[in-house]
Image (tube, helix red, strand yellow):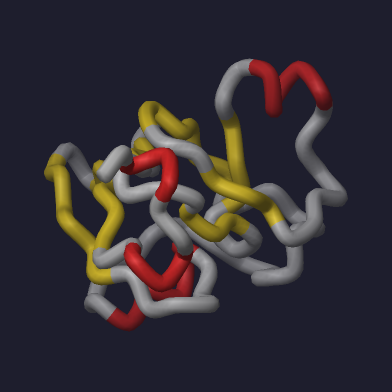
Length: 101
């Protein structure tokens, strides 16, 4: 099975780089990346949790995500691979985000 054909139900985890270490974070269906990281005891930067401040902006190094909403990132940011942890849901099991970048 190709990872591109996975549904959100099939995604078990994603990877995140935080404070120089790479973590495999369990994915909980329907949750955004930030909530999964917090549930797993990680402490990425965040503030509003509503897509308005940009504090949780990270660069997506792999995989695909869908942002529920975006009120802060420009088209240039999006084109460079930036996403908001508080609004991003993984679309495949290859998601890797760099919280240090």
